[in-house]
Image 1 (cartoon, rainbow, N blue to C red):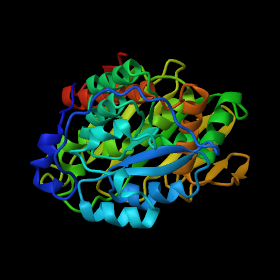
Image 2 (image 1 turned 180 degrees about the horizontal axis):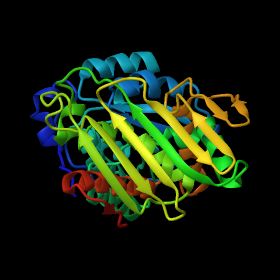
Image 3 (image 1 turned 120 degrees about the horizontal axis):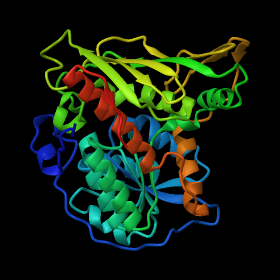
Length: 370
């Protein structure tokens, strides 16, 4: 099942996008080398200055050991001026969507961090790669498997690295869960229960527009539960059975409100997952093993995650998740090593997501095909 694409022209002509973006232009190929200062900090151009960039990513640069904010891309001049003053970004390093291609000649920028509506991820990843920049793209990677493959191809063709913003793969509690699963300290995993939901607000926001978001709760927060099951087992789901329900047909006319799905893995592990845009309080990851359990609740928050096993609670220091993921990607670039959250990782999630939507549509179990 291919989810809808939504290009820059569609986005600009949509009423919910007012103030979020302006016209775009195609960028040219520029094979730029990676530039690193003496303290090994790579320059980052942040594309899209919405809530996540403002409240999470921008502050994370102040804690990063390997990245620094050197440029911004925004369709709102007032935002550009504000960010310039607040973060000391030179006026010649503020771009709009019409001038995006000029990043190719900006030697202060080594990588581009894309924080745009889901439908724009593919276009901007491809254009950034063609401009000679490495790419860190927020999740979900794109709105379709086809777009994911195009993004991977573009980055490989330009010899640029691509990583997806799976912050939980660097979060200490999740890393400890993976460690426990791998060394089978509590025995092999038998079943997983994972879910993430929240009550979404403004009915006119882009997340409820299928052309922009590709889907609803599943694409936005359900993907965390999906990812967690994959990295806990170290396997890919083979069969998925899913169902959807809507209690507000008007608000969720275009996207999914609530979905539950069951995944079967090659080892025999079963994973029951759930997500919703219509209530708060679901934020968990439970793995049941031969000799106990591993439990996180909350599991997927920016701060405050908690880990407990059948042997007791586990206390861990928690760094800034966004600074940690940026630093990890910067090291991959500097050391020319692959990222564990590569484009291929994002593609695997999208293969499962498309299977979930297909199962809902056909009311049948669906095999996940790579």
